Amino acid sequence: MNGVLSYVLSFRMTNGGKSTLAMSLHQQIPNSCIIAQDSYFKDESVVPEDSNGFKQYDVLDALHMDEMMRDVDSWRRDPESFLRRRGLNPERAAPSGKEVFVLIVEGFLIFNDRYRRLLNVLFDKRYFLEIPYEVCKRRRSLRIYSPPDPPGYFDGHVWPMYLRNRQEMESLVSGIVFLDGLKPKEELLAAVCTDVCQEIQRLRGKSQ
Image 1 (cartoon, rainbow, N blue to C red):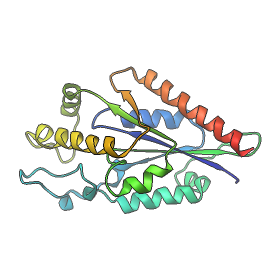
Image 2 (cartoon, one colour; image 1 turned 180 degrees about the horizontal axis):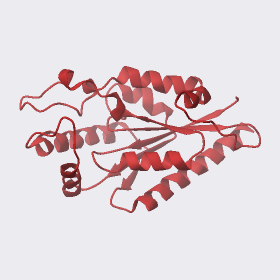
Image 3 (cartoon, rainbow, N blue to C red; image 1 turned 90 degrees about the vertical axis):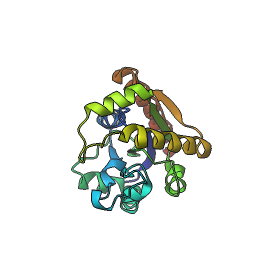
C-alpha cells in the first residue's frame, strides 16, 4: 500500500488522563494504533532506587526504551503490517488509495533525554495533559499500583520528578499544545480529534 504516515503524540503527567484520551482517539481515527511507554517498564527488581529507597520509575533507565524504539521503527517501515500483527484491520477510507496511518505515542518521558532526538522529529502533533498538584495526588491515591506506592512516594519522588521532567521538556521542545486535564473528557477528545483529522486531510491533499 502506498501510504502517507502521520505521527501524533499524547504526552502525559501521572494520572492526567492520557491513556483514556489516547484510547478514545484511537477509536475515533481510522488506521491508528497506540504505542504506550508504560508498556515497556522493566521488572521491579532492576528498577533503580534513590537515596530514600524510592523506586525510580520516572527515569529512562526504568524502561526498555530500545524495545519501544524498535516497535516505532517497525510501524514506520510498514504500518499496515504493524496493525495486522496487533489484530487491527486497516481501513481503506481514502478513494485515492493514499491511506494515512496514525501512530499515537503516549508516555511520560517522550521528550526527554537521548530519545527525544530520535522521537521528536517524527511527530506532527504534540500534546501535554496537565492537572494541578492536588488533583494529581488525589487521583493517584485512588489507584492501585503493583507494587503499591510506599508512604511519601508521591511528594518525595513522583511530583518532583514530574516538575523536573517538565522543565527539561519545555527547555528542549517547542510546538507543544497544553491541554487542561480538568476539562470534560469529551471536550478534550473533540479538540484533539479535530486537530488530527485536519492533519490527515492535509496529508491526503499533499499525496495526490
